Length: 394
Ligand SMILES: *Cc1c(COP(=O)(O)O)cnc(C)c1O
Image: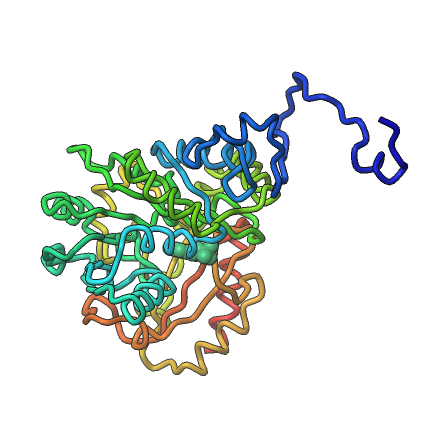
């Protein structure tokens, strides 16, 4: 067939795929995926990943990353979502309906709490809040369908009584889902975390944090071990059009190679800074699972047997300091940038007023404004020097 120059530009001959090995896998970008023939078109099935049919369902690029994340977290199946919060939404939307009860820890990631509240207001889901340090505060009923866990919890970093909470949920046949962003598949194995081989059913991970490692990409994942549960999630994933870009997957895939090294480095720097912060008299309380005075420390020791912890450290300032003082402290920091998220190269700081954040009493936390440091890859000496100079403004 003779072709016009315009057509030739589109249908120019391509090199046929042939064996070539590179460090990183090839990148597929696709909305349309071309079927070999009508037989392939008619034979495809939505749940078979190798029946490539359309970009939203996945390409070798998205599946390569999904498989790596499943492996990282010691699970079997993985679905990718455009953000960590979207992964939270995927789980809730697939497993909860009107009249069902979901239990969330009081220190759950703020937007996850907001999502639960949204389901409560608009879809008749019942939201119950428990104290992650006290298994007795989790009181499942016949309506309870889902137990959310977060280890360690957001901002105040209490490590939950994971063993007893999961045991209790299992006794009542309640699906357990862990927000595993902090542990990232490295601090402990969510699918086998105790001597009794306890496992959560689902692990949600904000890949935005450590797997991305750059502070520039948003993505989330949902990892499972049970095929039926995976199919339930996959069905919603497909019907809601939840999909991610091949380019973003390739970037995260690239960063995974050094994720463990970054995680170890950031947690080491965090521990060094923690020791220094403990000696500062303007600071009333430090919050970190490795600190023996922090709530949940014993649960952390029980589950994180290599004593790994992420690069997050929170502090509560002495009560005499006002919001204006703490704002001046944050504004005076130079290396620590004011921003949400973590896991990237740049250290971050965020300030919080606990009074506006918790539903239950929290006697283990001092009164005062809280600042969370998210440790990047700078040297610990430079970061300490920065905090030291900023403390001068108080
Ligand atoms: C950041 C984060 C999320 C949400 O991830 P995004 O990609 O920012 O939506 C969920 N859970 C935890 C614990 C997080 O830190």
